[in-house]
Image (cartoon, rainbow, N blue to C red):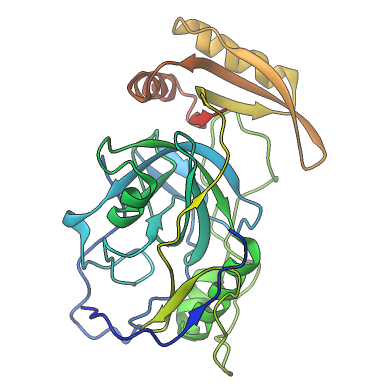
Length: 319
């Protein structure tokens, strides 16, 4: 198990659960994996009838409902082999590469922190990210248990810590993670518009890189602990809207035909949807949403109902 060591490097700040995470007991058979964890993306997987597609997405920026996990997973291995410490600023995410750095902003109070994603989860349908206990405390929702949040990946900083993790990842493991692309996981007939074909981790295997240590990002306050960059507990206060509305978004579709199919399925379960246009990657998309909803509990209940109706791409968003 990991023990705290002295801080070896500090960098300067520039600018301002249901099923919680894939934590499991550390291996005791001497696997030879670095104690600082490994680089990992992973293949498509299914939980409770919903498929998830991990990928390197350095443009990730989404809203939703955050939860947190703590004592039951403390000092157990995360999905990429690090040891979960509920007092560090880490988090679990369903699809982002591990490790990566994300900024999480509480849309109820404007508090914002940077955390290290090193685990998979949360697997409750209506949750976008699972924070460590310390992260939830700093964002001010450890009491209520959930919060409306915005999650934004820090692209260059995430690439830097991913490169450092790749250096420490054994070549055979990188080959396994990045090797032959998996077969496409099945999707429903109504699909969210996105890149065609199955989502794979990377196009080809990459050997472990041997060279000088990669320095930690210089734009985030933090320290090195056992070879890992850990964000410091720095809380920024960001401007947020006074009332962020909660919706269940069934999908964002490129064709009117898929919009009509989605609305028909919703109508069959007694739900009426609104349709609004948005631009993404140069495309015009039609967002099909139900709401606004007056509480997280109401959104959870409606989301589960919609997923059971076969609209498994549905998710909770905050707007």
